[in-house]
Image (cartoon, rainbow, N blue to C red):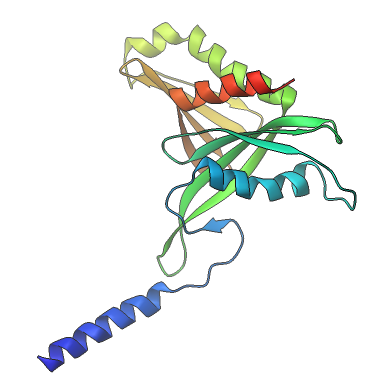
Length: 193
């Protein structure tokens, strides 16, 4: 009996020790799901360092989460900074990665689309779906459309009459379902000047 307990303890201890791996801070996150709140928190650093520019001056800005895809792979956020005269849309991309020890992590990155580009991007998706609606619905899940926008590749198809958008960017493969896309577009247009 003591040998079984000893072996069980050794097994659990070994498993525990090998699962503890130092995480580098280069966009690695151990959470399984990403919500708008986590994206809101993480996007602020990206926004003031990469988009607005770090400065010694005190600069007010807003970041408003719009919608998160149910897949957890894509989140949209609106930003405004009157002092820098900048506003636009941030796309938050999330995906699974494995480290050398086989531990699964989720990486993330943000893409900035300034106001005019964001409007153009959202409209291009909507127009592409509307223009190709008949084709997409003719053969559900088999008929697809795609296009490139900036450095993103966009793939769209329907399943049971509901379209799905897949965005490929810098190694990320994110699914953006109809509801999250429409909510993002509607809220962006409502809140943007």
